[in-house]
Amino acid sequence: MASTSTKQLEDTLPLQDPRHGQFAHTLGKQWPIYTLVAFDDQELQQLESDINKAEDSTGQSVLITTPNLSNRTLRDIYEHHIQHREKDDKIHPTLFIVADQKDYQTRGVLIIDLQVMTDTSKNVIGVLRCGSDDADLYCANLEIGNVDFMITRRRSKDFGVAITLTKTSDTLAKIRLCRLRLMINSIRMFAVMMAVDERNRAVDSLEG
Image (cartoon, rainbow, N blue to C red; front, side, top):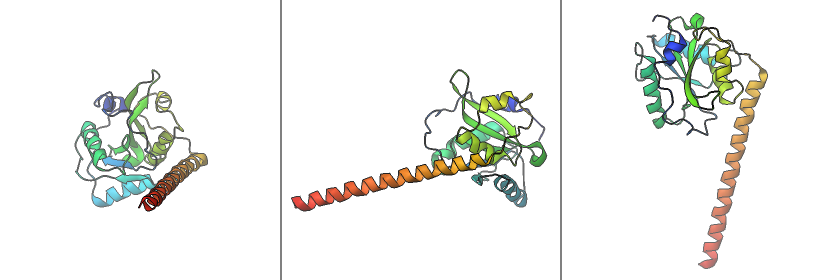
């Protein structure tokens, strides 16, 4: 596939996600990996491994191979993603990775963010290119607000050049802390529900 700048690719997508601003609880979701070029099974496994097993990767990216979207367009992948997220609550609804080059290890992959906040506080769809070994970490940074999409994009002279993220040990620590807090809140909610249920049973027993 011929190389296309991310600005050109971005222009093929809608300005906004039809459900922008509606996804609040996305922590712990998996970032889908789609492909625009044909890979055999071994190459697909290698792609997923390169993204998930890179240094500082969180291992939260998951390869989506059905349906086969190779040789389609980024718009086709976008349309599939917004439908697929309604059926699969394990995937991240607004962040996904796209391999649009056969030699992704040197040319990088695309990060599609469906909830980019602009300087004028508008939610738009954004496209960036980064190294395949940075893709999972990049999504993690965006998820916890550790990087700003618009600022990072401005630092690039051309939307088509690879962007190098600063890897810090704090990123994974922040993600783990956020997940721990989410788990604690879930446990607290469960405890409250159990207490209410126990109280209702006691009341029913007395009334009976």
